[in-house]
Image 1 (cartoon, rainbow, N blue to C red):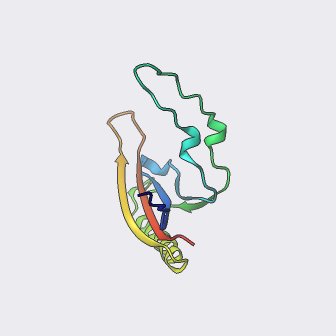
Image 2: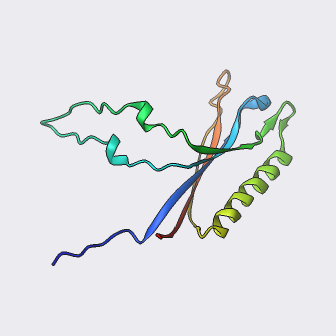
Length: 137
């Protein structure tokens, strides 16, 4: 028996990137793509018999239409800035509430950090992905 099943929901990912670079030298943003991509266009299957390199063009993968909302860095010249964290929370909450008003449901949240690895590193981000879903129209 063949069952024609189509996706009943659609998903959207919103990503926050918050700088944890000392002295406030990073960039922090909330990013939301405004165009869809089909992962199949950029996927190759590897096997023992065929391990041809994936030759997808970076230019074709890039999304050129997206919303970029400025966030504040976790650190300033004086160290960690709790006021900046509270401000980012308010902006991210606003985005989540807007998504909810548009019929999206916050389904999953996942976070990761790449922090300073010691003297001379000077790199670090705190990234959070907010995964929303809603019934497909």
